[in-house]
Image (cartoon, rainbow, N blue to C red; front, side, top):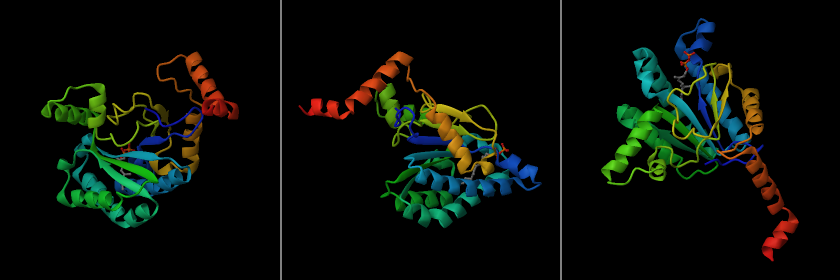
Length: 256
Ligand code: FPP
């Protein structure tokens, strides 16, 4: 369920960081230069999210399907991930960020697995913002692994049980999904969790997604009416009830 109230900030933002390759190509640079710039963009965006008091940020760093890219690009992305994590971890920890790596780790090298475990362990006490980095992740993989876990434990496969068994069970569902790079699809990201997310697509390529671009996405979100299956009248009624319940007179009534 959502962590936000109407007109407010999203509690959880999820991002498909698309467009690194095209950004590099436009500049006659190798694709990896685009991914490097993408990491700098992510670093700046994390700071902006901290400044805006966003509670959870989830980013799609490497999908289950990205293994089919040229070997050199795949190994370049993982080298970049390891180097960036090793370089940035002290700052991330000092800024109160708790890291979670979400995805199938069995497919990752031992070095990568150990860097991820160290980062999770080192940041485990932090509470200011959760950063979920989805790596070797796919929404279908997540639903299947959750169902498999329940079946192995002999538990009934209900919505509530699946919800708890999913890899993102430690955070509320995303309120806002942002996809950069101009494509209008979700590409197997957070399929279950996106049931009621507001979807924001922008042509900006990921390396160009700066503070002003995030503010455009936040303004779009603030203008949405989130109904979760209710009618507009019901939503207006519960908003009015929320306002009157929080007036001083209502507080006095409650206290009486
Ligand atoms: C999509 O752009 C981007 C990726 C598949 C990789 C994104 C990875 C990073 C930004 C590095 C992550 C690192 C850390 C530290 C979390 P694309 O290559 O599909 O771009 P294109 O659509 O223009 O080709």
